[in-house]
Image (cartoon, rainbow, N blue to C red; front, side, top):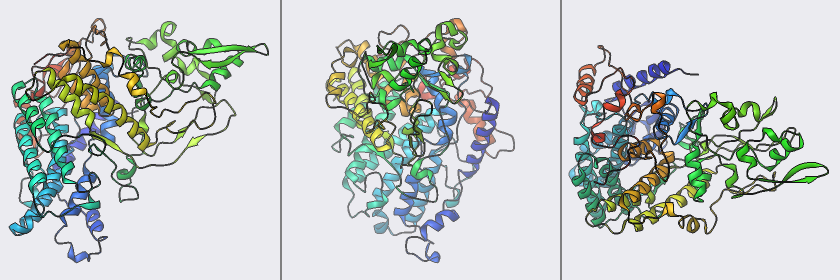
Length: 635
């Protein structure tokens, strides 16, 4: 186990290393080795091919790396109570996350390398790469938004350029200035994608859109919505203006799976197999599904519960095992509630699932009661399962759901829960990992939100909302299929009562009939519904989920939809919960010492956080946003 202070030291060393690399070399030995595989002589790689720089930039585009998921994701979930620690909620959930190294640097290295290569060309030749440069800019903006969500001001405009005459001590750009820059950059990218002529085509070097500039234009235009959403608390009029411009743009926005920014980087071996499969180490080990969110999804027959979370281990054969062994009392009560039994040869045996039936009855979240694990009489069915659900020394059956980490990694092995001495049923196949970054659902959730604000040029919020929720379900079904998570497309042939988790015809239509999934014209309630759907959609994008909760105040206290738990009586009031990552003091020997110190000072950041500090010391875009649990504000 890595203790909190050890995590801090590890992260700080990574951050310091990143600072040294901000202006570092692009064409490392490994990169040079890659270029030799393009049928060129080694001595011909004096000039890098812009297409291959782009391809390497895509490989380096990574808002979802291992350190982020290992160190930060569960902390972000805790802030919104979308996850419950498997040891139950305690004061540790307000400790917050430490800052990670800046991910935009990895893309900016190739942005600047491409600029350098083009500077050696004549104007006509250079102009042929306008669209490739614009696509690189789009990726850099995405990563810049991601980094600034964590901790405010970041090095961007002067970063990763030392090799080409820049500085080793880049300034920290203000978030407000970066948003202005990024909107301009995205506008220029759209103009290039839609008007530039005689462009070098990327073809297979573009694993995202295969060089389809119309789709790149939609992505660039849609990305402006992420910035607008982050401006809503500080500059609502500007945010609305940006959204109006987005919907008026002739290029359009992401609209359907062919447009969605959802892709995988490689099919086979590369110098780094993480490009293909993602990392190999486990994450989210202590993050359980939240009872309130799981119950909300099942109540509304939302198929995403099957894509977000794992089935528990209690298939019908495990239930039968405990019944036949005279251990019915050890079966968690919430599982037994959905079991119909019968008498057979004098013994009580499993007959069928009741309630919503399979696969719904295999998903249960953990209750959010404070220190629930210390109250086994009331909460033992969840938190004492290591004893109650332990059949023998080799077999313990988990009764609740975890996050489905095969949505994050292509190299996880799955073993089907079976009775003792039963068959060994495993899925050991490694599969290329697909990531979801910006899709039709997200776009329409923003449009629904801004329609509630009365943004000029937008239609009825319900139209956007309905399209968004429907799209989110189908997008997650697609992602589950591509990543081949457990039970997708197969029951493994063990339990005759088992069901697959695939999306079934008519399910989305049935889901949309529920009142929780319909807007009614009550603006306050409608806006809460929209924000909750944003939070749900961002289940596998925890930074976006964190930002959404931070700017919306959802889930809110005393909600009729999903209620935020109030732990004030447990010395964990809402204003103790972090709203940014913590930062550590730079060492005097750090060449960035003065620049980092000044950046922290102007943002009002201290480096010794205690209860409430990370809540009061907000990043610029979070100022004027509602407190956790306060609910949304109609701007």
